[in-house]
Image 1 (cartoon, rainbow, N blue to C red):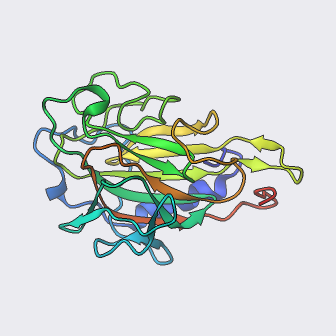
Image 2 (spheres, rainbow, N blue to C red):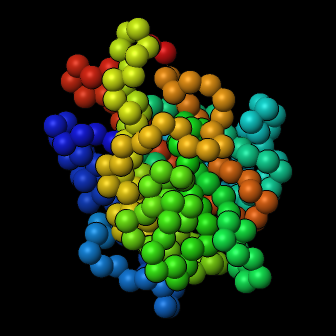
Length: 250
């Protein structure tokens, strides 16, 4: 995520939010947390130039981590986590990402067993997916956490079996020409339109990331943690570096 001394990307991000429609009222379940302080705007329609990673029809933009075709099922326009982690064929540096997810109803399960999955930016940095509905003070392993590093600022979860959204602005680490890290990765995330991570400075890669260094582009990874979490409407917008800013060696 961009630091405040680089206003261009932030302004562009806010303009993108303002230009796109709200999610329909039917997506807000009775009894779910209502929009309040920190709510901006939820996106549902990809803007021109967005890269569509999943439109509900096929898995042509996805592979297993061993490079073989993805084998997740598609049900009612959603991809269902099963058969191992999957990664996008698209790789990226700085992006704006939108996706929607639904956790299953698992009343007998507890903790990390309740609808567990994860969204890994560049296959390195996990934003947790979990049924954390009703938890008063969410922790570093709850839904919306940057796993093991930062708890969400607020619990913005809807109940299981309801669709939820993540809108994420991600800024990749910066390296000099010799490969020395100059700036860590940063992330701002909204869940269901509520700010849950505010320009968080990431403390390196999170647990469960794919092998390799932190320099260079990487794919989006969706985690299969043994629970039938569903995903739909996944797209991203590549964000260019600002001014003389560079990514370092690739």
